[in-house]
Amino acid sequence: MTLTTVDIIAQRLFAAGCRHAFGIPVGEVLAMMEALDRAGISFTLTKHENAAGFMAEGTHHANGAPGILLATVGPGIANAFNVIANAQQDRVPLIILSGCIDEDVQLSFSHQIFDHKAVMAPITKAVFTASKGASDLMIDKALAIATDGRAGPVYIDIPIRVATSAHPPANAKLRKPLAPVAPAQSPQLQQARAKLAASQKPIMIAGLDVLYDDGTTQELKRFVEHFQVPLLTTYKAKGILPEHHALALGGHGLSPRSDKTALPLLASADLVLAIGYDPIEMRAGWINPWDPAKAIEICLIDNTHYVHHADLSFTCSIKQGLMALRDGLPPNEATWPNGDIAQARQQLINSFSSKEQWGPASIIETVRRMVPTNTIATADTGAHRILLSQIWQCHEPRSLLQSTGLCTMGCALPLAMGYKLAKPDAPMIVFTGDAGLEMVLGELATVRDLSLPLVIVVFVDASLALIELKQRAMQRQNLGVDFGKTDFAKVANAMGDNGVLASNMTDIEEELQKAFDQDLFTIIATPIGRKAYDGKL
Image (cartoon, rainbow, N blue to C red):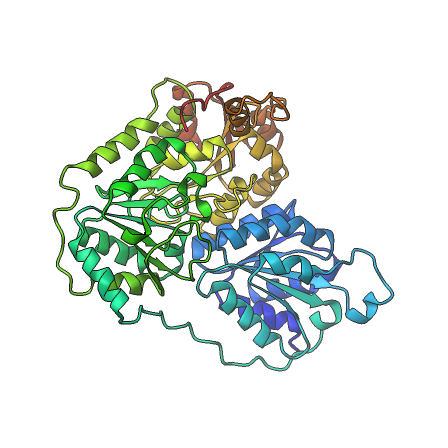
């Protein structure tokens, strides 16, 4: 068979580990969709491109390969803008494939045409247009850019005639992965090592960039245990150290209540280690939270955000940076001698543990207790996500998936769908508010069509609870945050799957036991009442 441009692209994506693509096909991308199928990459029809992009992200978290979003010209690309911007902010390697009208045709044709590349340029790492005979080089560059350093989305326009044009045999030479960059031997490195060796009250905050450096989580665990450094993480980095570990202080970023424990620790520490920490996940209270003179930063790219500062900053492989700091230094077994860390751990537990028989905190605690330790959870954006991120214990990286940089709603269900497709045996649970689920109700039909046995817990309060809480805190009127109650159990049942209403802990326990044995998806709707998050975040 004569290979075409789209065949070359599809084959190189398969070689990169991609096995799934998501989107909505229209005429301009049919050839690309068929080529993906020929190459062994299955295509999933979704109800909206935004959800398709989150499904693609879910596969990436499951198998490490870049996600693939297929979006057609015009409205397809416009619909996908949010999830592509999310991929940029959350460092997701996402390949976006679209068709485009051939340039000569555009001179006398305007239907559904706008400049895709101009729209995509600000929210991607790179944009490409496929050209005849060079698509092997193009797709290799696209994959390298998407995955190198700080990962992110790359956009590819494929003109209609170029898509099906014959392509010469692909260049057999694939670019080898880059060697990890170690920090240079320098006076600054020696100064950092001396600070570490002398520290009696060190603390580390680690972020999502730790996830994109092979072997880093293992080295980080060796490092914190060797020097007895307590660890704070962002929400995205939860689980890089199992959160039952005595040095683990959990995830932070959006909770004023957790800040009351975490920020004083940073202020009282004599050394702050910012490791792969990207403050894009954090609320305004985390602007300049420590004295730069006592901070050492190791990051994948230069610190130009100015949200925090460090007098000693190294741009390098996170793993190699940690190894260079640790190399040859003796262990430290006497940090935080007054028991501050054990007290902080207990204070955080007490701050968020449920003190009521029924409510979002007690529901989260019950679900965590009932499901397997290795359950992968997804969280939508809203008040429940903040509470969940503080309560839910993660025992491995990428086990609580959410949108953190952009905080976009409607992500929890499609993230779980993509992950479950890539890892069918993984136990999964979806946490969402009622507003977030209503945004993606159509994708329940996609879950049904794919026969994915997902368990979906919906917090029902008929309100944008986080925004309503902010309105009251600012003494503003209740406006634009309330909506009608949807009977989610009936919605699930109408689709031929399983939907139940749970109004007490016994219901939750019984339904969870049954749900994980079902071949269908299960919605567990939990009415929590208005103002259920007051005083809990």
